[in-house]
Picture 1 (cartoon, rainbow, N blue to C red):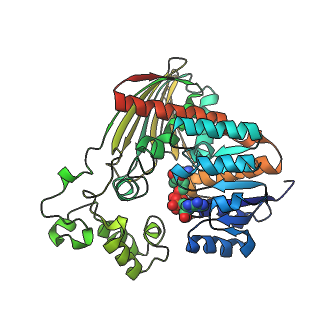
Picture 2 (tube, helix red, strand yellow; picture 1 turned 135 degrees about the vertical axis):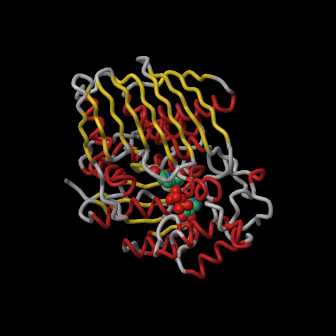
Picture 3 (tube, rainbow, N blue to C red; picture 1 turned 90 degrees about the vertical axis):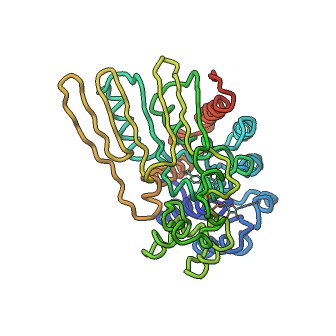
Length: 419
Ligand SMILES: NC(=O)c1ccc[n+]([C@@H]2O[C@H](COP(=O)([O-])OP(=O)(O)OC[C@H]3O[C@@H](n4cnc5c(N)ncnc54)[C@H](O)[C@@H]3O)[C@@H](O)[C@H]2O)c1
């Protein structure tokens, strides 16, 4: 590797800190040299973890961008609605850019980012981490080998999981479309992007249905309180979505202090957690929140060669890896994002490939190794000045985001949308 890449992190929250861990694991390849975040705790934490000097710690991306260019690349890990402005400002300053998904909440904003990145001629990656997992790499190799013939159809399930839905999409940051983005964009832009990647075909038309079926006031049990901590014991103890159950009984009491518990309070103690449940957004009853994003959605797609795909996103299952079935002209694959089973029609043989990545809680295992795969590819692309290492660049990402916007339009209008 020819050079040490120097990176600034904009938004030192869960994701920004996660990507920065690459620098701790591979200090000869990446160094975090600046941080921008208005949150004192998070900014200081990152400065301490990476030895960033005081003069390179900024209170916002605006303050960071008011200085001349100070390193090679920026990681923009702010919330969804705060991607467009820093991405355009950083492109103008000629920073290479790692941008968290979704690119931005509207098609126009995505196009604006695309135009700015192209005009600046900088390298750009969107964190579609699923493209970079060992599992996806192996799956693509099997498909490209011709073993299952041509793909005719794919059935894909994104099992968000009951507690993950409650945490992120009912109580948490992505609960309300006006404040962040719709559910498809927030959660399933990965899935539509991945389906497009596996199909290796542009998508022609999409169609979608989806509803907020359960997490609404009409489903609230009689007598339940607006906060789990105030709920009558017999109601709280029979509710799988109880915040007390999710954060305390199922996690903290068993030693669990990482995500999602650390989202409630930066320092996870019994006292801080109780305070968060008493006063913060994560202590609210799931039937008494200001959420409006769907809890179940289906998307049907037809691709340019006539192959079809369907995707289901649902909250109502255990939290697990995505489940996919791929129907080919010569064979069939079923997989759980880790183990791939290939059945060949010629002799009905079944082959099993295990691509499991040990979960060590670090950069190497996040998103099934996708966080590492993405950072590895991007840092290599920068060090070797070789953009071909990037699998989720601006064109691919814009295309799959447009699929998402079209599907959401279809859900709202009841139409079939052509791309
Ligand atoms: N790739 C994935 O699989 C994946 C997974 C989860 C989340 N995400 C996306 O990553 C992004 C970040 O999510 P997160 O969970 O890390 O959020 P977070 O809330 O933990 O972090 C965002 C940080 O941005 C900071 N911030 C706010 N205003 C700022 C400003 N003006 N300048 C600089 N920083 C500012 C906040 O203080 C916060 O620390 C979101 O867009 C989210 O949708 C991607």
